[in-house]
Image (cartoon, rainbow, N blue to C red; front, top):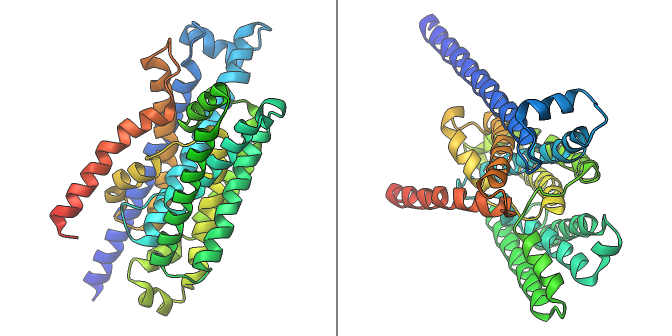
Length: 345
């Protein structure tokens, strides 16, 4: 018995050490991505000159570029990436499906619809914050519809079906707005915004989305224990004292806050919430409570590095971040499909 207890203790200690090493490694990757984001851009400054201007205010344009353009872009990229990665891990844990992702509940599509309405009506041109505010309202509408259709205690299947219906309706409404748009310039602006980007974002966008993303992430982190229990099945989780309806409500609310706020300021950036948890799951032992912080850090690193790559690959063109993440994520998604087929699931 003592040998068994000792073996169990050693295994737990080894697993904890592995989790700490993973988190530290991901923190280092986020820091690296953050620095790369700061020194990447079309200004023509050298890396040394840019970093010097960032830390020492010389009163020149270099300091303005580093502190007022590149820094908020990097901060927003880290926040958005963390929101998408964390939300994806939480949704996959709730639905117990590695193919689940934040857009499944329709928040991204309705937030995009709100932004499209702001662009189409011209409000975004007259009031700078109209676009993100309308997008946040759209995300809020999605949550209201989701709770109305599925109910706070609805099953996972009902939740998925309700989310798909809301996303399809929002996508159809967005297409209708584009189809009926009499202004080709507005239509072009809508299409480019829907591709997702961190370009031309300022501290205003950070202060608008940051608190909501942080609140959503806190709510999602609190679901770790419940999601761990849910891996044993709903009956076993309830026997352990987990209230499934409350857990679903927390995951949906946290995802809506984090992803809705992220979409409101950057547009639609896909596949981060699908790819990052999939890559990191084997390194966390499959436990959602360990996967949640790892996915938040991994998502931040992925968005920061992808945004830097989007700026560096085509410096003369505005390559959209959402386009690049789709090219990265689509092959991984196909790999997931083929692996699931081989497993006979």
